[in-house]
Image 1 (cartoon, rainbow, N blue to C red):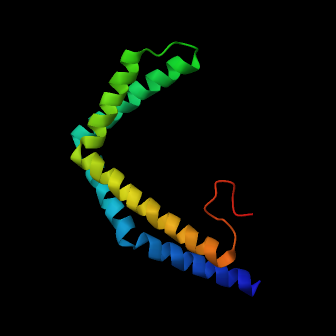
Image 2: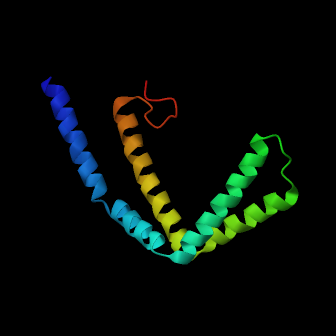
Length: 121
């Protein structure tokens, strides 16, 4: 049982180091900025509404026209070009890269592919 405790303690240490990493802290700051940016929130909500509308139409057997698809793509581009939203997505990608790096290190050390979508074993 000692081994399990040691592994758990080290895991908690890794988690603590992770939440104090520059990537995590930068993402948290970008999230706060995005949450406090009314224009960013309006654009995100508009995109989500339009996306939900297209998904509902598809799920109910409706035909999604080219105009709806183009409007959704244009709104997505506008959303991704908004400085606050763009910064958030970039920070999120940097944190995701860090998680993949950690997973790759574990995979190399153990010989198990922790990065695969099917699990490690």
